[in-house]
Image (cartoon, rainbow, N blue to C red; front, side, top):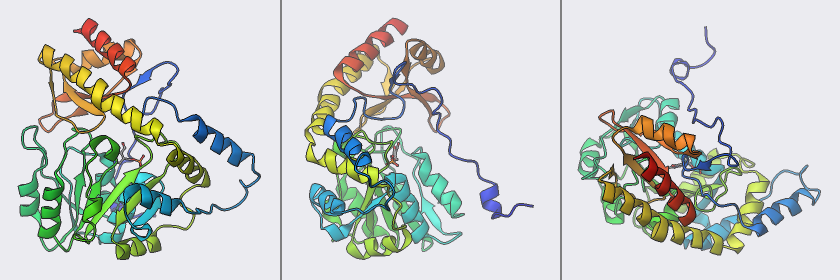
Length: 350
Ligand SMILES: Cc1ncc(COP(=O)(O)O)c(C=O)c1O
């Protein structure tokens, strides 16, 4: 007999396919990561910290919350740092829901929302995105009941890249004032779309963001939640005092000192590389979902063969299945040079 709750025993672990991801052997276009290294000052700050004789001390976070607040244009009281945005998603769902409550998770979407909902044994309502209609706003609003405790708006969504306009998010927030509206802005720097300026108007909105993607620091795990101060104060009661490691804070502090690397990478991806890949796909008549982020969900005729051929040419992408069971390949968009190489390989394959 298990010592755990029966619904936990019934779950399976979220296991992303991390095996064999060697950046020396492959171009990694499978996890929506940044494809260039961190800036030298970030590396130096980490080395300096390691050499400073403070590794034996518990973390202290200094003014990192103020710095992130300034970057986001909100008050420091509206920010809570987390151990990656996965941690923020978990804390929000855990704090808002009781067993049996309802959560609306439009799909397909990022696996952690469902994982966290299953941990709390929630009832999951899953309206679907469509390529043409995008986020199912009307269906979400129609699905709200007095048991709805969380509504997920992954903005832009992973894997399809779909973006919801801030006005629509506000409409959903006002239609469900008793629910937490979790707006995942993990790819904010790519989409440049946010509801961070609507937190006073909509006290039920909670935004999760991260330094994993555009800032290129997923290994060190730093995310943050933006929301009304009273929500942040409540979540701080649930988050542990040392949940974020000191190295993450050191790295992000240094990264914020030199944002040019991040911002110019974002410009290259969104203004040069992505249009390049889109133009190639358009020319070939290959279907893909319109995306506001650094990835495209692409549907070639024979995705299995294309995936294998890419891997043989040392490029990794991520297979993702749509609602109809059709397999697509989610391709992260990197630098111009990497995208030209990808297009060249795709040309050969097709
Ligand atoms: C939509 C979305 N949210 C959150 C995350 C997790 O980010 P983090 O590394 O900050 O936990 C990802 C990672 O792929 C994602 O795609």
